[in-house]
Length: 224
Image (cartoon, rainbow, N blue to C red; front, side, top):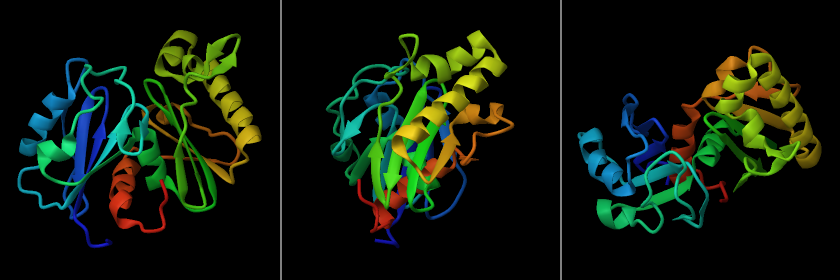
């Protein structure tokens, strides 16, 4: 499996990005609230023109279980649940939550908690190569409000950097106490707003999403 040629697709609220493990640069196009699964599927062949691949990995911004999308995305158009990407592309496709895909690409062994700070909050846990997505974003955190309401981009804009940072540190402390990770990786676009990180945490990189996508087909130790 290590020599399988894979294209990884990172589906976001503003862009769809792809990369092949055979080499080359990231390619992307604009997504947005009018993009359906069909719209994206029709646009991808032009984007990956000239690339050779045997299989496809997708990081989807929502819950996914056993390769099935469970809910429509918040920041894209509906029409994703039940869409048959394998039939459309004629290639094998593996779909997982986008935060989990970035987490896999960030994993260095042991027990890792991953938090993705972006428009919302993505989360995943990997324990001894067993990868588990976690829908922490909408769990209660403080004063009847959710983790996402305190750690998401809207909170950064509303409360300001100092208070937002305090809530990030507080959330990492709470989740570390509950889940007992060996280390925490904080990724997503808004990690750039943190000059300092909580104890036992390191900075992630959105490019790790592609590494995670490749690993879905090439890492035989990985269990999802």
